[in-house]
Amino acid sequence: MKTVSSTEFRSHASALLSEVENGEVVVVLRHGKPVAEIAPVSDAAQRSPSWRHPGPRLVVRGGGLAAAIIKERERERVF
Image (tube, rainbow, N blue to C red):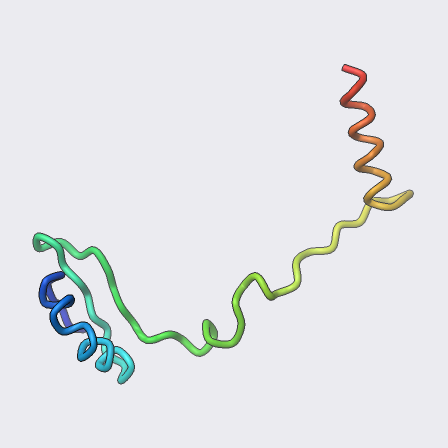
């Protein structure tokens, strides 16, 4: 793990990113405190973004989901 100041990171960003590509982890400091950690992307993160994974299917017994939503909205209008 390599630690650099934010000024040093700005001056040498390209070289530091090349090091990250080669597996190095870079911690950026501002006023002596860590503010960012730059690490190589993991294989899992490169595969596909999370928004592309299928979500859970919603199922309502006794009818379709749209009908259940309409029914609920009608009940809310009464009050």
